[in-house]
Amino acid sequence: MDHPNQGGLPLEDYVPAENDLSSIGQVPTQADLAFHNAMMSAAGAPLMDMSAMMPIQQPLNTSSNGTNPGPAPESMSADEIALYDRQIRLWGMQAQEKIRSANILLITMKALANEIAKNLVLAGIGSLTVIDHETVTEADLGAQFFLSAADGHLGMNRAEAALPQIQKLNPRVRVNADASDIRSKGSSYFSGFDIVIATDLDPNALDVINTATRLNGRPFYAAGSHGLFGFIFADLIEHDYVIQRDKGNVATAVGLESKTRMVVDVRTKKEGGRTIEMVTKRELYSTWLLASDGSYLPEEYRKSKRRLRAVSPALPCLRGLWEFQQARGRLPQKTMEDLKEFTKRAQLKHNALGLPAETLTSAFLRGFSQSIGAEVAPVAAILGGQLAQDVINVLGQTQQPIQNMVIFDGNTMEANMYPLHPEGALGTQLLPLAMAGFGNGALGLDPAAAMMAAGMPPMDPAGLVDLSGST
Image (cartoon, rainbow, N blue to C red; front, side):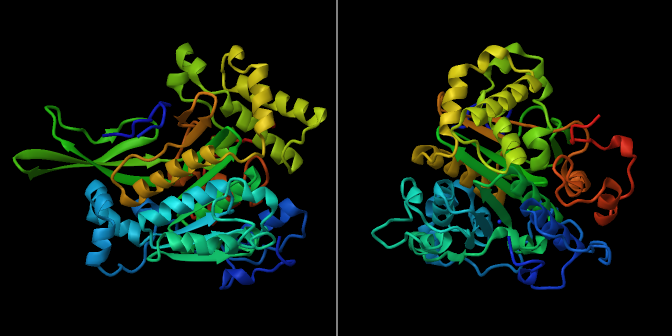
């Protein structure tokens, strides 16, 4: 059975010492330096000279959803099988073993990350690394259940303070805390993880991290919450999964199912007198840069007034908020000037998406602006649970994953999924565009240099999408 949310239905079921690249742990590649310079540029720090660097030698690994699990783990013990019995019955032993060997990176330890960490650790992943350079403040104590003033967490590093409580949830999972700034990491740092999850970061940071995960062939999730609103974004690059179902009267054909999904293989097997069809599907993804601002709603939305009216105005509001952050380097403050600027940006995004003017009301804008920067525990629980469940699905490769943006609207208590993609190529072919950093100068390579660095044949410049807004 395909994902119940395809088509927008409700989901139910940071700066290091100057030129310090010591954290990379090896001779820095061109990708490392590009990643470093993108972070330095965002902070206004001097950049490193890349002229003497060789082209990237590491190919993009996209086999089996782009992960590289490494050596096979030891077989599960009887105790583990008993502990995870209900999960094994749900998605099978093979999927549980994949989950058990997964090494996941979780960036920024706030309320949303608390929920994600809880669900992944309880599911029995192999290891979880939480990285956050910020210290615990009183503002962190309201919606984060791993932290408390009574335990002396105030003033401690957020990742290190949360670690003991995370570990208590499941002693079988290896939990690591990193108190360094994610901006001090080279792009090769991300190659050590099977999946990277970034929460509550500004859009420029998400863009740079997503580019680094693509360079290393690693699936990437981004998520954030603002009061009653929030989002989940997934870039799995190219992800294969197998759907098993009773064979129907008409055999499933190999080929395209949608702009982002294709059937790549169909096999059958006999099971208890039934013929089971095993359908291997592949989902293609866009980068954060393109999905967050460079893409329109799917054609089936644009052709239906009813579907356009059903699109949550939280989507253009979030896009307007991300654009404000990119322009100002901060969230809007509770000043008339900032609120007017945010409102204007949200209205422009609403119009660009072709949404009806009446769905973005002044009351909604007021409620959204009042929510910016706030953490609400139930919203974090909903988003964190959904994201963690999708990570489990991706690791098990037995269900259709998120494609590719989920918007949560607390006014309606709906979390709708919107496939936001540009026209043209998807999947691995988007790597050059990600490296070129159209729109905000991330990884400042021009398209031709990006093609060379990615080891791809030259493309006609006319075929590249310019997202800079220039004409």
